[in-house]
Image (cartoon, rainbow, N blue to C red; front, side, top):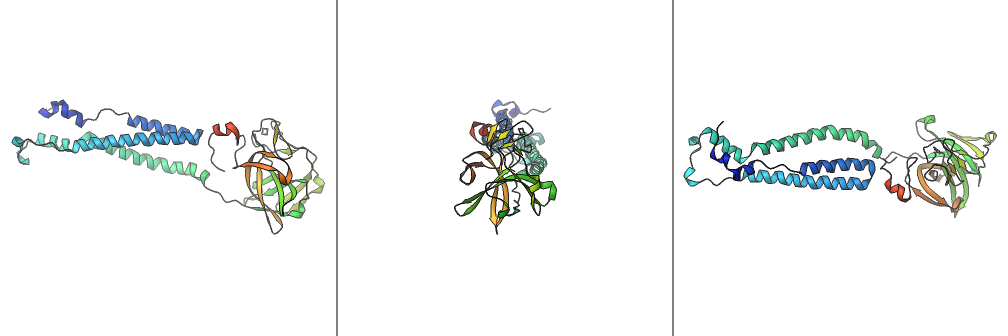
Length: 310
Ligand code: FES
């Protein structure tokens, strides 16, 4: 092994080999916090992203400065100026290393190749896993028949096909015609999905099976319930869908609706924290459609993990 005088000069050695850095560790911690945030809350995602970007910036700056220092040409001493051919081969190689140290090049290229491979492997998988949940799905408006088929003030247990998949997409809702609000027809359309774990809620009252009425894809059965109850864990709701007992965390979900050519069209579902009042004059505290068991109001809603939109 051949040593040259400069190898033994400590003031030059620290330029060639940057000391250990905490920036990569900080960057990794930021990425971990960011990923955990996707499970916990958007606030944690923001904190993780900030930590990752901050340490990535410091890391890159350190790398850039290391290269910059290494690229600085040393002032040749006048007496040592020689033609390249006259310089011994070992010394020529050493000077090349000084211009662009091998450790900096290897570090940068390893990081670059690692990042490219990591991105190529991770991004498509993440895209296929997470992407569809965040894409807006088209909302189908189902025709539930003429509004005259819904007697004012009465609930009808209504089942309907909600998508082109046919009977497998059949849903159940409790529909009540509230009369008019101003000059607009008003309907209450309550989903039968329990707000605890999604079991099928039943009306607390006798269903009049013999008075069934139908429309293509739709069946309606009159009922006069005192409320709604869930057979799974005993959740109870009043006639507006408010939770009054048991483990459900909010009121029953509802469906939006529209009136087209005198027909009732059911739209997309939404969740409800609670309802004040009844019928057409009820004040509905609505939120975006949420999963069963998910709090939509109060402190608990802030602590609930992020859910992909429906
Ligand atoms: S699923 Fe309805 S009370 Fe549990």
